[in-house]
Length: 427
Image (cartoon, rainbow, N blue to C red; front, side):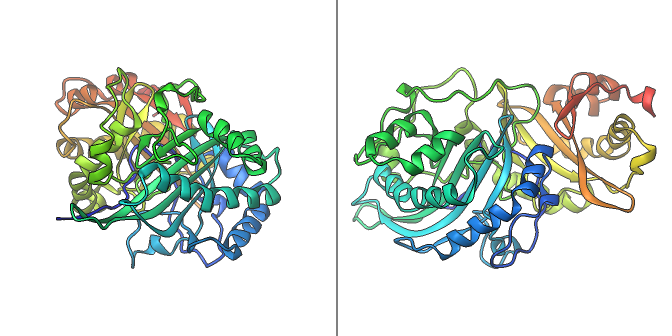
């Protein structure tokens, strides 16, 4: 039997997320600051643009054991426009923190019959993350204005034994505290690096992972004293997305051999990134159909596919839409733009869209990011998030509650800042 894996992003885990607009990059191109939606991340992209370009060039000329290529969209298929985008270094907004993220494709093909999942991930870490961190420490100041430094590296795996004919991709995702990242680059012993890894966030194939250097099997991730993410508000905890499908984690399914050797961990009372990723895979065909069949009519952003995400203690499904009506920045307030964007743009689309949403009790809310542009203004668009509980949205489309009731039961954010909204008052 042949198993072919593809990398899918879901709960924009990491890098679920700022919204980015697709651009055609040159070989040494860098993310344009105007593409970045989060204000602080956008400011950093502009402030450190020369350093980011130097780092990208340094990585491009560095020698790795196998070919390594920076890539912004890790699951873009050959021939797609996004596959040409080599802007693999960017500031992203994740779990209410700013992360300097490096993502890329490592053309190593590890034999899973010879190397365990932990050994494959460890080799990728040593081959790519360590040398890139050393380059980063030379090009980027240690006091860079970010909270964390993260990596998302995709590599190949194959199973050549007689039981499985398996070939596909895996992904390792690591988020270091900023100071830990620089210390990791300068560490001289394996013990020092292991200590830093144990308190960092590490995922392999979308699973919380206790990466063990120099060992065949991983550590128990649940037993590690890892950095807790900052307290969640009810706002979106967005990664890059990189618009490949949204989170810092771009999970790939585990190989049959690894799945048998490492059964899933026990259940948790709160949803995990792995839960969001599972739903992303389960309903990918359905969400892809929404994009294909309803995308143009509903003005869904084509470079940002729907993604399952974690926000606080709930799983939500995230859509990005482009408002077709431009605003005059000088003559409208954020409240009026938020009200009109809901009443005239989003609300009319909810009835048809709600009928096509995945039918699962695990989905508790939908986050609609509406991108507003301004007349004669080429700056980045304004982002308004309407995070609507599923039950409330169903009641609204069934005419059981008013639009104001839905707004009252939802969360509204303008450029990441929560606002109160009275529709009639500001119209």
